Amino acid sequence: MTAFNTISSLMPTGRVLSNESMARHTSFKIGGPAEVFVTPQNTAQLAAVWQACQKAGYPVTVLGGGNNVLVSDAGIKGVVIVTSQMNEIKIEGSIITAGSGTKLCKLAETACNAGLSGLEFAHGIPGTVGGAVYMNAGAYNGEIRNVCESVTVLLPNGEVVCYKKDSLAFGYRTSRFQKEAAIITETSFNLTPKGSDEIKEKMDDLMARRRRTQPLNKKSAGSTFKRPAVPDKYAAKLIDESSLKGFTVGGAQVSTKHAGFVINTGSATAADVLALMEAVREKVYADSGIWLEPEVQMMGF
Image (cartoon, rainbow, N blue to C red):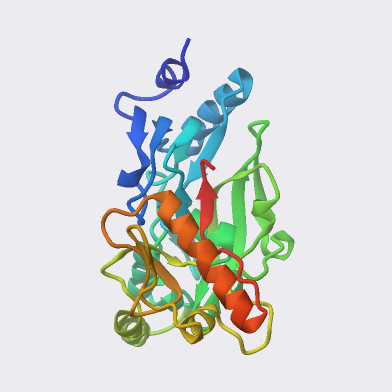
């Protein structure tokens, strides 16, 4: 029995695809086919798929919104589980709980409408709750760890566990989930009551700043490199100082608007992006002695 047939037998019709192009599911618009592509709608379906994959020995890759990833031109072997349909939002007092596939912009807007402050910084971050928690996403002096109350995960044995904020090991663009076999299913955020108009004003201001400074209309994976662990040093500034704005390899280019972004000009391959990233790292290191670390997550390599 093939992986496709095995997973299809567990899921409703239309939830499982074979050899699905990952270029359709990433913000870079790059990537070869996923051998099996599945979109569970709830934790029960997710657990059934993961258990079946473990039993059969199929490799598993978990994806949220596909916004901070670069997928290999060869695609991804095994089963790609996409959590985008697990997107329910619940509000109880100042606690807002969202499924891992919930888009951050939708979560921030829902919190705003409920008069809950704390997620304004997340409004313009492309991606989903699961990915944001996994990476401890942040922007404009805000980070997920500042508002995260608890994270519920599915473990390989099928057990569902809730981790409280003090045990999440958040750091700069990291969390415990980068080192553990667990799939995030939902997250609760502890927010602060405030007037919706005031919250919206801040979200609009941050979004306007993004539009002025970032290539939001281009195909990219957001910030390509992490902030260096050197005081007062930033990846974009270092790249700019190395005169790399507009530097191009194939269809991949360092954005002329924001040097921290690598963009797909229309025909970029994953190989183009990797070659460009390596060239940038080497030039910046030669000029500054600082070795940039990728923030983009690599899949299928």
